[in-house]
Image 1 (cartoon, one colour):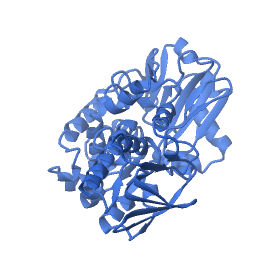
Image 2 (cartoon, helix red, strand yellow):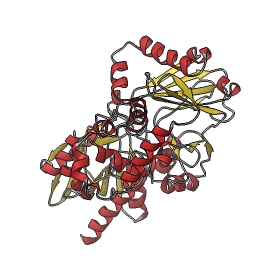
Image 3 (cartoon, rainbow, N blue to C red):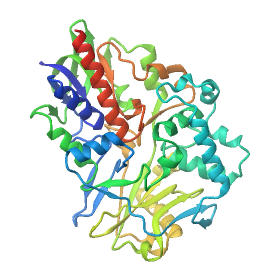
Image 4 (tube, rainbow, N blue to C red):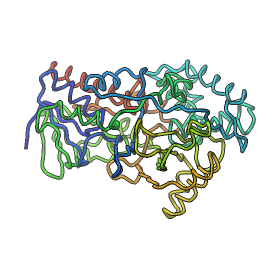
Amino acid sequence: MSKHDVVVVGAGFAGLSAALELHGAGCDVLVLEARGRVGGRALTRFLPDGTQLDLGGQWISTGQHRITELADRYGIATYPTPEYGSAVIDYDGEHRTALPDEVTALLRELDTLCGQVPVKSPWTAADAVLWDRQTFATWLDGTGAPDAAKRYVGRVVSGGLLAGSPAETSLLETLFYLASGGGTRALLGFRGGAQESRVVGGAQEIAERMAADLPDGTVRLSEPVLGVAQDRTGVRVTTALGEHHAARAVIALPPVLAGALRHDPPLSALRAGVFQRMTAGTALKVHAVYAEPFWRDEGLSGVSTSAAGVLTETVDNTPPAAPRAVLTAFVYGDDAARLRTRPPGERRESITRRLGELFTGRAAEPQEFVEFDWPAQEWTRGCFSGHFTPGGWTAFGSALRQPEGALHWAGTETAVHGNGYFEGAVESGRRAAGEALHALGSR
């Protein structure tokens, strides 16, 4: 049994941020990671010709100060998301270059409402109970907006941001997420918005530099945690390879995984309720690789959003000076669930056919087609992040960030700002480390 001041479970951005804070304060810290790599839900892959694909999270922005500071600290460059030409807005079969007024009005109403949600305690909003008992879908139905506008807003907000369908989450969860990220304009935007920049070398590069900044032996890969026991001496973390004892522990896992750990004594009812009511997103992200970005020659940016069809959105994911071009497409919610029931060849045909409809016939014939299904990954089980189901915030929200004995909770799902993004993961890790340091100081 090894002994440490703090054991951190998970080597994503949250866990590594916590470890760096703890190490900087003089703590003996150990990080345990089930995967054979660091980075969590960030995973960069290079094709044999050097074409970069970010299979998981990929964007950062100047408005996200913590993750930007980390990239600057390690001298990691970023580049703007390509913006050549016009976006395609498929509004029930009609291709537009600007949002219809009825869509703009719905987004403006959402921004007004999310301004009434305290991001540190959404359950205290004046209308929290009302907003938490209805889904985002029922709220949209009650707006009186045209059907196409309701479908479009439901898809780009619930799908593009929460990786699900409007019927899965409450209005309160939706409004909290918008408030955490600065509103619809920031979250749905590119230049100046959440999709502003990508990382040279891939987002995983930042996590790898963070891990390298810790002393040798601090991060132990391929060591899944099986259980966590607490007693008056501290925390005992059991893995597939042994046991580790510490005064405190930071659990920096997605809720679906954190709730599956074996706890002794069992978690409190409130903490268990957090995990039971926080489900993972169901996005499917695919990359179509072409010899060149032909859509630019046709005056198109590669960005599209749709009120109907299997794809909710696409983006030009071609890095500067890349040997080939990349269109990345996203499928969400019920569409993603249905598509997963089909054989790989049918999934590819369905997606590439839709790319051809949005752009040109050339888009339907990529040289390579790469999909990576995060919900199928044993140590992830969903993406982009977890969200409270209806009623979850008002019943269990107050327990979301509360320590349980010697356990502290991190992960982007627990963040106040930048929830669902790398920014939120970094914020959460630093907060959890601060709690642990305070407790160690008191001891």
